[in-house]
Length: 260
Image 1 (cartoon, rainbow, N blue to C red):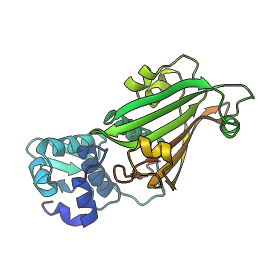
Image 2 (cartoon, rainbow, N blue to C red; image 1 turned 180 degrees about the vertical axis):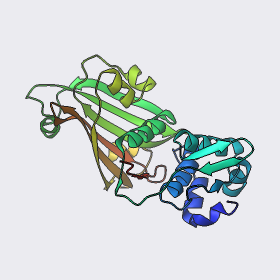
Image 3 (cartoon, helix red, strand yellow; image 1 turned 135 degrees about the horizontal axis):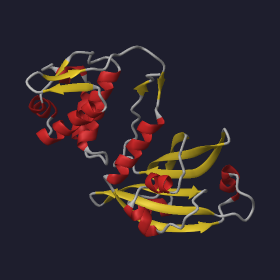
Image 4 (cartoon, helix red, strand yellow; image 1 turned 120 degrees about the horizontal axis):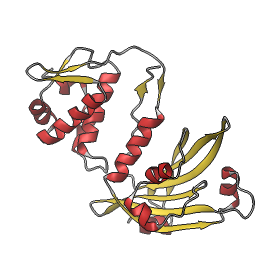
């Protein structure tokens, strides 16, 4: 498939060349994966070589190899010495959904490929609205965490969260070394459902200072509710609000065909 670039729009190809928090190999992998999952690149089609991918998309061969390795790890392609790489995924039109596992993997990937500064990590009484969402009695405390994530010295996200159900003590150092999802797993919190709401807001003085932008500048706002299941009932255990600098962050969902 020497003309693989022809199946992508100019904006998709330009996206690979832009400076984003997401690693370049992951963006190339996501681009190819989406084309395989929606049937644009059909089952049995031969994929370009790593060198061809590198030349076509203007990336290094190492980047191309890692993207192909990710596709192979998910059994979307099969690599055979002397025969090349072929698509093994059979597209069938079914309802589309966003798998939770895949979304959480992307969140962790972004966390591992950026720097974090933990501004606050303390158990305290949440505001009434948050306390009500978490189902906490009056006076109960939750972990209040405030962080700023950066890439190459440029802050792109201001994160503030309230977490319930963390029985063991945690510190700023823990959140500087591990992702929140890793800490949740270590404490036995298994997320079963996540909802997200995305909107736009203007930066106040605090956010403008954290994200190195001007007061009133537009920001992407994301609110994430994370649930666990207890006795067949969902229970909110984490409320997260993130503000992203739009010039340094782009939120992209990679939807998969439901295989069930």
